[in-house]
Length: 96
Image 1 (tube, one colour):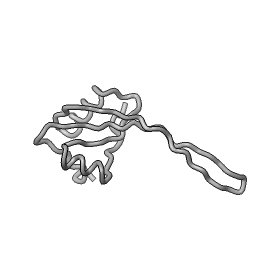
Image 2 (tube, rainbow, N blue to C red):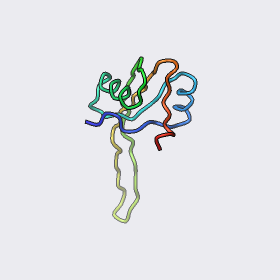
Image 3 (spheres, rainbow, N blue to C red):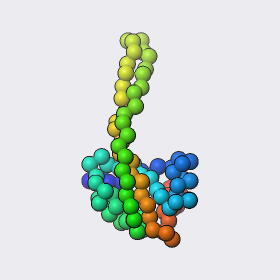
C-alpha cells in the first residue's frame, strides 16, 4: 500500500516548514499515524517527532452542459502534518 501520495507545497505549508520544521503531505485514507511516521522516516531519512492527521471533505462542483446541470464531488482526502526533529529538513525541490 502506498502511504504518502504527495507533499503539499503551498505558501502556508512552506512557511510552516521554514519556521516550525513542520511538513504536510497528502496520504492514503487507510493509513494510520504509525504507518505515516515510518513511511516518512524511510523515504526522507529524518526523525519524526509528531504526526497529526486531518480528513477534509469533498468539494462540490457544478458543470453547465447541453443536457443540463451536472453536479459532481471530488474525493475525500487525508492530510498528515509531520513535525520533525530540529536540525533535520526535507528538500522537496531537489527530487523534482
